[in-house]
Length: 475
Ligand code: NAD
Image (tube, rainbow, N blue to C red; front, side, top):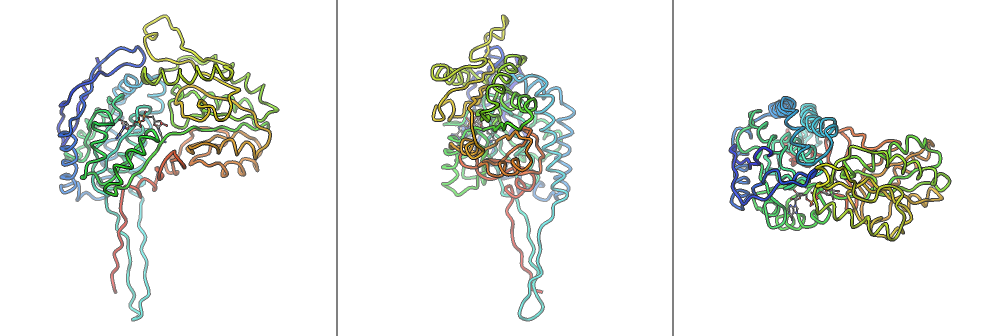
C-alpha cells in the first residue's frame, strides 16, 4: 500500500472526506485510497490561505521568499528517492523518467524562480512636469492573493511545482489540487514545505475529483483570487466560466494535437530518433507529444518504415493512467484500424506477468487516415502517431496549422532558411527545430487557440502571479 493521502490545510494534515480507490496503472490493482475533500475542507483551505497573507508571510522580503524556495528545493533533493517512488507508483511511468526528468525538474522549478526573483527589478520613470520639478513614477509588484493551482496526472509534481514556485515567489498563498489519480508527490511536497518553514497556510493541499468536488468548489470559491490550471481544454472552459463570475484572472495550459514536419532535407536518423521520443515519451502522455507527423513525399515510405521499425523495438514503456483512458485510446485505434493502416503496434501488449492486469497500450504508428478523421483531429494523449505525406512547404504549414489546438510543433530540416521560415509561421506557442522538449525555464511556455491562455516560464509566470501598481511622487 502507498503512504496515506492527506489534505494539508493551515499547516495541519487531515483525511476528512469519503475515500475513493487509488489504482496502480501498472497492475490495475487498488493500492490505497484518496479522501475526497468535502466543501468544508476546501473552504478551510482557502480561509487558511487568506489568513496567511496577513501573517508573517506578508512581511517576507523577496530575498526571504527566494531562500524559502531554495529550502523547498533542498527538501525535495533530500527526499529524492521517496519522490521518485511516489511518482512511479501514481503514474506507472518508468523509473528513469521520474528520476531523470520529473523530480529533477520539480527541484529546478523552485531554484529557477528563486533565482529569477532575486535578480528581478521593476521599472521607474522620471516624468517632466510644467513646474520643472518633475515626478517620480515607480512600479510596485503585489501578490494576487490566494491562488488555486489545479494540475493533471501526467507530470504531477513537475506541473504542480511549475505553478506553485512562481506563485510563492511573488508572495501569494496557494491552495493546490492535484489530479485525483496522482496525489502522492503533492503530499510529500506539503511535508517539504513544512520542513522548509513556510508559515502555516502559505501552501495548502486538497484532494479529490474536479466536477462536483474539490476542483469545482475551489474554482467557484469567492476567496480564490486567481486560478492557474493545466488540463484538458474542455475543463478550461468550465473553469473559465467559474472564474468569469468574479472576474478572477486565469492562466491555462490546455490540450494539444501537436504536429511534426519532416522535410526531405532533414537528417533522417535524427528525425526518426527524435520522433520516437516526441511521440512515445511517457507513452504519449505528455501534452507536448507529437500525434500528427507530416513527411515530405519523396522520403515518406523510407521514413515510415524506419519509424515503424523503431517503434516495434521500443520496450520498457509504462501504462495509460487509467482503464478509462486506455479504453479511450483503444477506441481511437479501433477506428483507425478500420479506416486506415496500422504500421506498428495497435493493440494491447501481453507480458505474461502482473502487468497484464494494467493499462498498457502498444506504441502505435498509423497512416492513411483522412485529415478530418477523429484520430487525426482529436487529442488522444496516448502512444499513437499518424503519418501523412506532403508535397510543398506551404501544404506542410497548412496541414500543421489546421485544427483547434496550437500548443507545440517540431520541424526536422537541415535547410537553415527553411527552419527560420517555417518555425515562426507555425500557429503554436512552442516550435522546436531538430529537437523536441528541450526547455529553458526562462522561455515563454504555453499554447495558442484551444491550447491555452497566457504564458508560463520566467518573467511570464512572475508577471501573471502579481499585480503591478504605479506610485507617482510629485517632486
Ligand atoms: P483534466 O482536465 O481532466 O483534469 C485536470 C485537473 O482538473 C485535475 O486535477 C482534475 O481533477 C481537475 N478538474 C477536472 N474537472 C474540473 C472542474 N470541473 N473544475 C475544477 N477542476 C476540475 O485533465 P487530465 O486528464 O488530468 O490531463 C490531461 C490533459 O491535460 C490533456 O488534455 C493534456 O493535453 C493536458 N495537459 C496540458 C499541458 C500543457 O502544458 N498545455 C500539460 C499537461 C497536460
